[in-house]
Image (cartoon, rainbow, N blue to C red; front, side, top):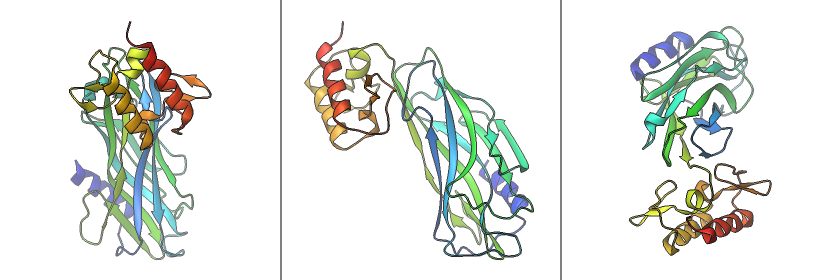
Length: 262
C-alpha cells in the first residue's frame, strides 16, 4: 500500500528535492473531539503542518504546501464498529484529486495536489475530510485513526517530499494519530465505570462504580488526559467535551460517580 502511495506522490510531484525543511506533520481531528457514542457520525479532518525553513518561491511557483497521497487506517478494539464515507479533498487541492473508501484497516484513501498553481500558503493546510460513523450496536471502547502516506512541499526550486516510509532524498513524516473513545450515554454507569482488572481506560468498565474508578478519573483529570474532558457549555454527558479539562469536568464526574449503577 505504501509503495503505491509513494508512486502516486512521485507522479504528483514530478521530482523531490533534498530534504531541507525542518519538519512536516499530519494530524487528525474530529468534530466531536475525542469522545463519541454508538450511532454517532462525526466529521474527521486531516491536516498538515509544515516548516519551510525560510524558503521562497521558485520554478514551481510560490512556496508552501503542494500535495499529498495516503490512507487513514483504523486500529484498536472497536475496528469493526467504524465505517467511513468517501473523503472530500480540500478545495485548494483539486489537481489530480482522487478519493475512495478502502478495505479494513484502511478506512479511506485520497490524493490531490496544486498542479501549476504553486504552493499553498495556508499552514496548517487541510488535506481532506470524511464522515466517520460508529455502529449503533458498538460496545464501549476505543479506536485510533492514523494517516500513512506522503506530503509534498514547494521550497524554492525544489519539491520536497515527507513520507511515512521515506526513500532517497525524502524526509520522515510525523503523524499525530487520533484516538476516539466510544462511550454510550445514559448516566453514571456509562460515564463513571472506567476500570476493570486494574486497568484505567474509558470503555473498560466492570459493572461496578467504586474507588478504583474515582482514582482512575482523578489520575486522568490531573494529567489533562482526553478521557477526562466530559463537559461542554455546562452539560454533563459522555462525548460532549469542549477541549478543556477543568473543574466542570471533575464536578460532572463526581455527580455521575455518586449516582452509581442502577
